[in-house]
Image 1 (cartoon, rainbow, N blue to C red):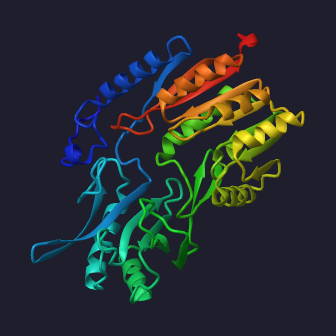
Image 2 (cartoon, rainbow, N blue to C red):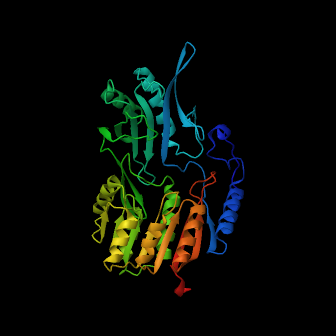
Length: 388
């Protein structure tokens, strides 16, 4: 039985709503929910949890704020309370990697010592908006990103030198500039102050370069389990034509490339596609290519030209896939579709659309990639109904 911990920020934060229960109980709740949702669509093969469900998040984010309370001025960092822009100061978060806690504390102290003003959302004044720390689970490399409201950071080289003296484990420091009134954390401009400007991690035996704006799953251990299950469901024999839709920085396609004949990664985000191409080169992979286009429109064009795919991996956002995407996916006539979902509700909605087009879900496995939260990932195998 996993030790039961409580979090002092739970009620205000709202993220870890299952904290305070036994971990085994949270798995049971999630397993029952998945089985209930998939009933009549696919056979659930259970849920895989973590051996240690704490400190798994490889990405830490803190918002910075400057507030006036009467005559008193206050600078603070923290996380946004659920559904608000109210900042809750947090220490020793139970789901974030522990390596970042000391770095956060010393960044805060150094910004005060250097008299770096925190950002005020109301007035639009101030400099430091956000602090991001990304940790490579396998290599241990650490990327620190400071998000600024303007380019100038007084004494930035001295600041980074001081911080590196305190934390030599930091392998790269990037200053990102976001001067827009927006909910987006990162802006489009950045400068590398120390190191290469990215970190490199290992996943499924492959190298991946992670830059400040790269999408990379926050739970590395469970992501590897998810991808291995997806590749198992795909049952690749070495000659298949594979499409990796919503490919991001190419993680799934690259992980599967050794077992496929050729892989095509499709992703609308051009920055992610640049990273994907770099990642393919890092691993010396020659049977994969990437294109920056809408996956649904691209597959529909391929189908109209008579092209087909043997296997389709799809890993859509929480909103799931559009009807247009599902129509295009079926038009490619794959013998297997492997759907990686971070939202079981939209997964089931999309399965109904596949069923209308002659496909049916066969097997599904859930994964607790977001321990202590209500969220669950699932890998589902979808095949033409004639194969059932």
